[in-house]
Image 1 (cartoon, one colour):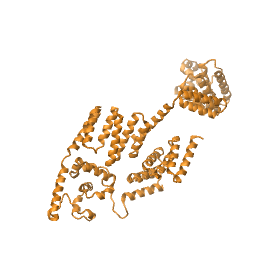
Image 2 (spheres, one colour):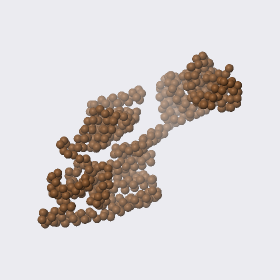
Image 3 (tube, rainbow, N blue to C red):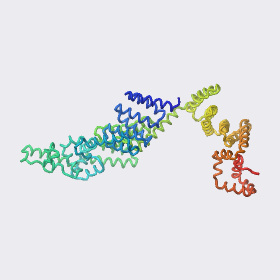
Length: 570
């Protein structure tokens, strides 16, 4: 059974398993098929569906991305990716993915339904007056850093940054956060209004929180009595405390900049020391850890690099930082493993990174690691002793006429010792016996490439070309064998038989021309403007031939044209 047939069989078995509710069995079958055909977009799509059934949405997303990479114009890939994103509550991204798929299939029902479903989640129940998440979008952090009401919190209060990140990733938390005056102030900055004032004055749009005091209009003792006065004094002290610059955060940023400068100068020890001190002052900023990991990487301390990356991921998950920062940490970990030639682990962490954020740079690194892993496995598989055993087994099969089995043994021998020219020659002989001339010719070419002095490679190449009725190329091969061994009878007979075949074919000028022009060397000669001019001169003035033959290069080309029968001298 060929690999193609095996892949089809595994895919069908996986489909049956998935339809029967056996999602894990389906995943295993699709995975086995992908080992044989790693570029099959249908297999990635089907496995994505199986992962979804198992509630393994990150894996489903990754396979959906691979589906799109393999076949960008296939709508189902976008349907799979959109579904996995929706299951992870990333509705904005899911909607964009569905809409991207509609560019290739505008009437696809799954994509259209996906867009509609995402819109429902993004806009809320019917009859409401929803707005988009005001905490996301371009320029949000820039506006907060410029407004004096939020600038101090942003620069000096780490909990405020965490609060904003939470609201960016999960807007549903807004309803439970409105009692925090910082949230109301931030909304006011982003929406261009002062919500604190509106709510203090009884804005009907939020009766539940209308009792929240405004920082601009604090309740007076007359309104709330002594308790109100105490509350007002306490809040004033608290606000003043927040307004004070956080020395630790300021110093941490300064240390980071010093670390960056040292890193650029390749002073990695100093850079590591600066990043370490910065993280001690601000343990919520994981960029200090990823920067320190980069310094460890350049220093050659890959273990410390990976520890910092993992710590950055753990801290980032805990405080819910932007997924792009987590993706960066995973990618750096993958790069570190690739540096140590541990490509399996490198691919694992690149995949983790791509699940968080799919970037061309990380995808390229993953592909390079996969290629390096295959080469590593190929080299590890080389074993000349086992290659000789397989070659001997192939020879025994060849003698008994079992050519398919001989090919199998020779192929294994080539994997074990890919630089042995003789094995390619032996396999070429098997292909010739089975009339697989194109495959045999390819093996002969490889044989000659590995050992240009191996006569049998030229003899077998000549025999195959003769069988393909490419007499000119066949004669060249036999002549090369004759040059290597003037006493080789097979080479002499090959040259003679090719010449006779050419003479017989010259009764049909069109056939002569067709065969001659199939030779790349002849094509190159006939396409040379200088040679065409010479041939025209020879036709008009036969005496010009003698003059041109004095030039060794031109004489060689004319002889080749004479040999294939494209020109003749009377």
